[in-house]
Amino acid sequence: QAKSAYDQALQKDPQALPALWGAAQVAVQQKRHADVKEFCGRILAVDPQYKFGDVSLAYGRALQDLQDAAGARQHFE
Image 1 (tube, rainbow, N blue to C red):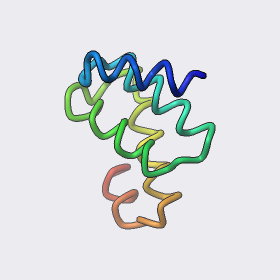
Image 2 (image 1 turned 135 degrees about the vertical axis):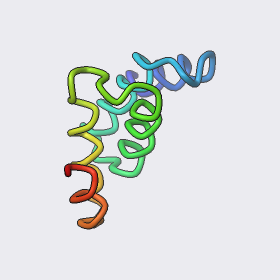
Image 3 (image 1 turned 90 degrees about the vertical axis):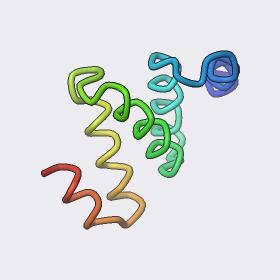
Image 4 (image 1 turned 135 degrees about the horizontal axis):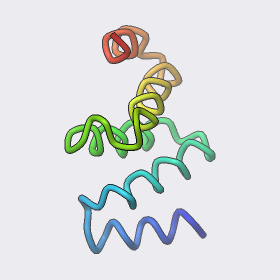
């Protein structure tokens, strides 16, 4: 249900940071790593410090889960 709600919110405003972060958190729970990467990447492009680094951490972990060790290393550095 949460995924559906965030999908609807993002249809109304694709740049809404709270909706992007909510969608990313749902994707983390569902282990949809590519979606986590996409949502977090969109947030970081607008506000790299959003949620005090939690978004950045989720993005880096998604890169690791997607077997992109070089990308994760570069991101964390």
